[in-house]
Image 1 (cartoon, rainbow, N blue to C red):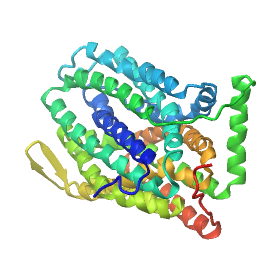
Image 2: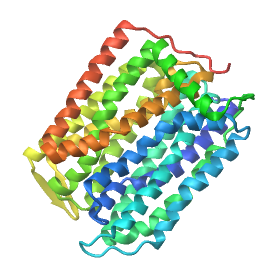
Image 3: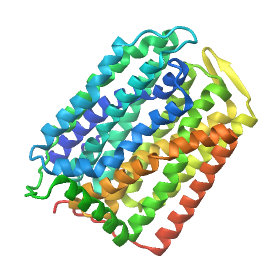
Length: 433
C-alpha cells in the first residue's frame, strides 16, 4: 500500500515529517508508559503522589489558552516551539544522577518531589505542541484526507510505542534502576521530535496585538464561552468528553494500583499488557482514521466511550474471577485479556477523536481556538478527577471506583446518541481559506 498515492507534493512532504515526528514521539512515549508503575513499585511513592503524577499529564492543559496567546505574539512560531522543547524535555537527562533503588526501600521523599517536578515540566510542553500539531496539519492536509493521514501517523506512533514498551519492561525486570538510562534518552528524543514537527511548512497570519497578555487571556476565556454557547453540537461533544474524561482519569491511576495490589504482576507483565492493547489499537487505527473522516465525531465517540466502559467493566470483574496462567515472566489473567481487547479499541479510537474531533465543528482558521477550548476543558477535569478516583479507591475499594466510571460513560454515550439525532452538522471540506 502506497500511503503517498494521490497526495500533493506539499501533503507528501508534510506526511513524511509527520511520520518522522510520530515515530520519535512514539519511542519516547513507550518508554514512559510504565512511569507510574515505576513510581509506586520501585521508588515507593504514595497513592496521592501517584494521582498527582498522572494529573500533571493533563492539568497543564488549563494553561492552553495562555500558551495560545503567547504563541500568537511570536512571529517565529518554530523557534518558540524548539525553545519550549529544550526547556521542558531536556531536564529528564538529570535522572541519570538519581541514586539507585535497593530492595523495598525506594527513594527518599525529596526524590519523589524532584521526580514529580521534572514530569510536570515535561508535560507542560503539550500546551504549546498539541495545538500546533492541529494547526500545522489542518493547513497542509485536505479535509477529506485529514483523518486518514492522521491515522497513518498515529499507527506508526503506536508501533514505536509497542517496541519501546517491550524493551523498557525487560530492562526494568533486569534492573529496576534502568530508568536512569532510558529517561535521559527520552529527554533527548523529545527535543528531536519537536524539532521535526517544526520543519512542517506553517504560514502564520500576521497579527498586530496591542492588548496586554492578561487582557488577551481574558478574551480567550470569553471565546471559550462564546464557542460553547453558540456551537451546540460542539458543546455536547465537550460535555461527553467531560464525562468520559472524569471516568478515565478517576480510574487510570487506580488501575496502576490494581496491577500492584490485586493482580500482583511484575514489570514485564505490565509491559506485555500494554503491548497487547496497543497491538489491537495498531490494527484498528487505519480503519478508525478513515471512519472519522466520513463520520460525525459524536457517533465515533459512542464507540470510544463504549469500549472504555467495557475495559473498566472487565477489569472490575477480574478482581472477582482472578483466574490466570503463567508463561515465563508473564502472569496472564483470563478476564483481563478481554479487558485489554476493549482497551485496545479505546486506544485505537481515542487519539484520533481527541486529536482532531474538534476540527469537525469549525473552519480551518478556527482550529487552534477550538482545540484550545478542548485542551482547557481537559485540564479542568484533570484538576479533580485523578484525586477523586484515588480517594474513592481508598474509601470504598476498586469496585465502587470502577462503577462510578461505568455510569459516567453510559451517560456520555446516551448524550452522543441524542446530540447526533437532534443536531446536524455539515463539516467544512475546504481547508484552504
